[in-house]
Image 1: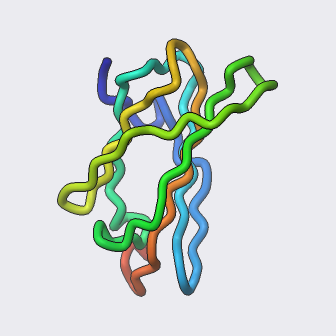
Image 2: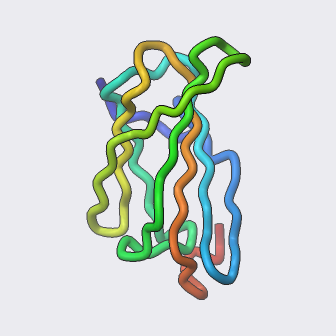
Image 3: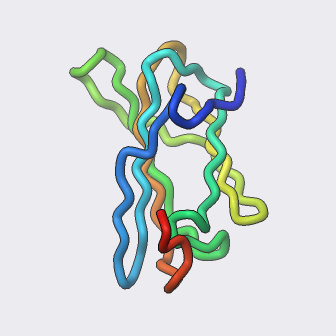
Length: 109
């Protein structure tokens, strides 16, 4: 179990900005395990900690083939969300984080 590193263990593969909500898409490498964590600063993506709307997770149970739901456990503190993986050993995960859009928050990313 460990804290995953952006750019090495996972990437932010998409950021959707809108008038109502913003969404972040995170994709991990295929060697992450249950108990590993990802910490993301929500304000970088225009989401306030009190504006979190939802988190959804998917796991590839068979590489590049079968996808199943695998929602992480989450904790929000000081504008950061911590995702704790629950998908098993050596699995690639995709997470979708959606939150209420905050005007002019995180506009530089």
